[in-house]
Length: 173
Image (cartoon, rainbow, N blue to C red; front, side, top):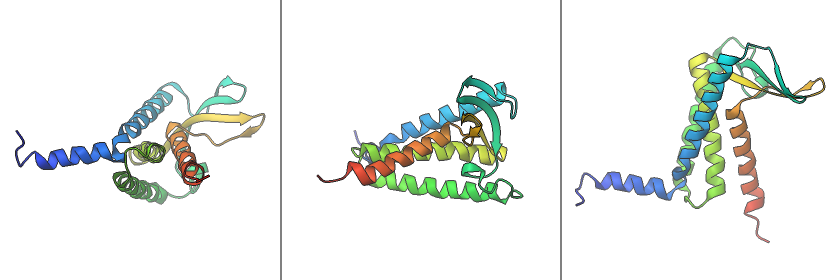
């Protein structure tokens, strides 16, 4: 029997199941994989000592106190809280956006939750450790791409899917 106290709970559950928020499990999966891989990197790798796995791929533990491509990494610490505040604001906006779209908008929902999960993973590092743990290093000969992690990969994939969804997937032929 439905009691008046259960009605708000059921409405919330229905809203979660009918909106893009139903895809939050994917953000949680990204967050878990990201944090677990970073813990493995911290436990098994020595700082700045690459382990070559393929001619173009190393595992190298590095810390990034800045944003993408170590932007503002050389500052005196204010950037930690600045980038944390940005991550919280973006996360809140993405949750709001997810709550406004239909669950059936799969590509958009997946793009947004990938960005959300990745942002949350890097936010945890930034708040708890004071820097983001990176360990994936790609290179060609002597040209190195900046080290990154699973959270960065999820954010990048989410952004690419968002661009695809915005410009290609919704085109009317």
